[in-house]
Image: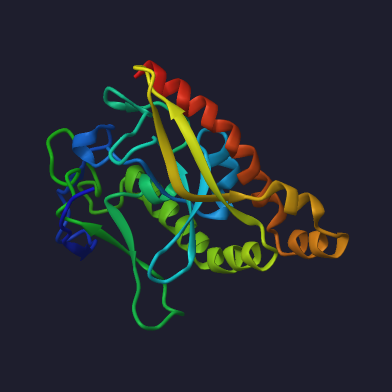
Length: 237
C-alpha cells in the first residue's frame, strides 16, 4: 500500500484513459502480511489462508484478518508477478478502489479510486473505461467486489459482537521455526476457542445458526489448518 492517498470519485470524463496494473508484486502494494476479511468470504479465505482476530488497542474492538505471512511486509503468496492462490481477500483485491459514501446511508455507494496508489497510471495497466466511456469488464468486476465488501463490512460488527458475547475468542501464540534453527513468535492475535464452541448448548448454537454466524465460525476454525501451509511456504522462501 502507498504511504499517502489521494481519493477521487471515479468518472468516465476525468478518468477516461486511466489504467491500473493488475499483476502482483511488492512494488504494487502486495508486500503485506495480511488484510482484513469479512465473514461472508470466510469459506473462500479458509481454503488458502489462516484467519485470526485482532483487538484494536484504542477502540477495543476486534477485526478478522487473513494472514499472508508471519512478519510485517512478508507475503508468502507472491510468486514473481502473480499471486499464488486462487482467491485474494476482497479488502486487498479491490485496491486501488474503495467505496465512497455520503452522509445519507440510503444513497447508493460510489466507486472511488486512490490516485496515489502505485498501481494507478503505471505502464501496462488495464483501462477502466473503453473508448465510448463505458466501464471495462475489469472495472465492472472491481465494482462487484466493492459491493460484496461493503455488504460484508456492514454485517461484520454484529458477527464479532456475537463471538464476544459467547466468549468464543481466545489469545493465540504460534512459534514459527526458521531455516537457521531459530523461531519467530506470532503474537497479539486471537482465534476461535474450540472448547468453548463445543460447550455451547443447543439454544446458543441455534441462535448463532439462525443469525448465519455458525458457518463462518466453523470456517475460521478450519482455516487454522492453513498455518501448516503457510509455514511450508516460509520454508520454501
